[in-house]
Image (cartoon, rainbow, N blue to C red; front, side, top):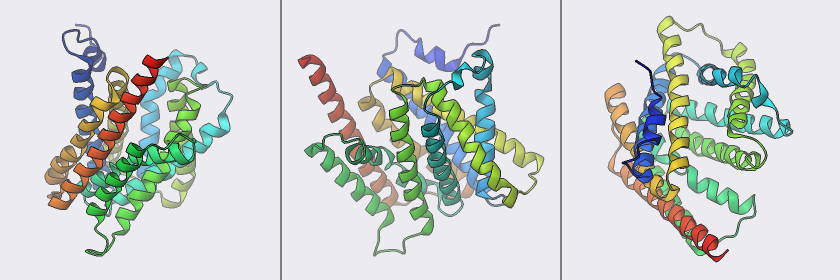
Length: 305
């Protein structure tokens, strides 16, 4: 019996609309990410976040290795190596801060605040890439950051260091995504992903000498699973954005918070409070409205051309 790639099977479902396929893939990616983050939180009780970050990048690269073999390393050809290295540093710093935050903050709370990511990217595109600022963009940003304030609630509770680490992590990953947008004009997606894994391994590998703790067999297997789940989650989400309109997929990103609540409840007996759900809903609503507005604007410009 021949094995078929499940992602390819979803892509080839002719009797199911691209939107539904994209939604299914997005929901599945949320499950992979939530389980990965729960596993990171579990491991961080005994291992340093830097060690976990290194093995996440290492095993993620191992799962990517067959592409390198199949292309005979041609996938690594690029004329923009310094930019790839800079992106790897940003992404590596983000991953380290995120893993550290997961050891300090309930899984659902961290996931809800991380939903600010798309809004940070939109803001970075305005101020760094010079994209035009329209009223709807500003309104979406205001609503999104209002959601963040609902989650953090400064003045009503002490601002947690872990929450601050989540926010800084989102800023770093925003820089990484903006660089990836620039790289995508000249390099193939496979080249960008390959260099990301390689450049993330180097700094975390150097730091590993200062925090190394020999993992048990169970911990090592769990880190293999983390690398696998991270790679699968990114693959599913990338495919979802490829086959479906982002304005349709973006609302389903809220499923990440649902999955995080389920994983947090099963693994740590944690469950997000009411304010976390309200804040997360505001952030996703803002991201969805912004995505749909941008989609309409793009179609309007295409028709005008």
